[in-house]
Length: 220
Image 1 (spheres, rainbow, N blue to C red):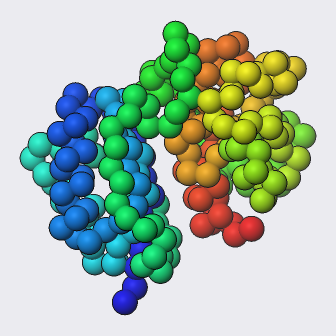
Image 2 (image 1 turned 120 degrees about the vertical axis):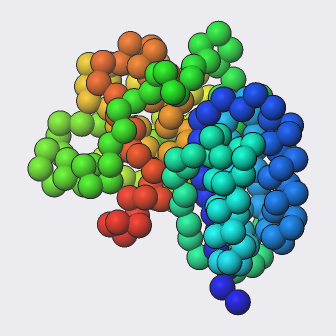
């Protein structure tokens, strides 16, 4: 039996996050899917596993359900091969944020302020044609950076994503440069790039779809 891991997020206003979370939990249980789902008033962030048929049915249901199709419209679905045992159980939680950054008064809505989305093709072309014209800043945690990263990228050395304000002084010298933020699937960069813009960085981009999309296209 073939299994699929479904990875997706979307920043969108969810007026009744508890109700939406209950909908997701019921749907996943009905389809025997496991994984982690976080829902907030600002959006959703989920990584789920099920059979190929179950994940396809999941996508169909959430994008056609009368109550939630507007919320789920336009989701960028990312998939990878699963083994049926990637997650021990299903966890669906309602949180204040879909990725914990805890910016307080500096919090922002990525639908209003974020870096310019840069496609994997564009980033690859930049590396080939103008490698000295931009700087890649890795917004993943320190241990993730050590596993593998883009050539010549900067590691702010965050133990946790919410350390971003603390490490900002390390990046101050990049305010006038062309900066590309990267992360695994893109969700962290939505806010991280917007945070840099808000703090005065002049030319900020983010890798659309994250490293996941880049590696789908260009491998290692």
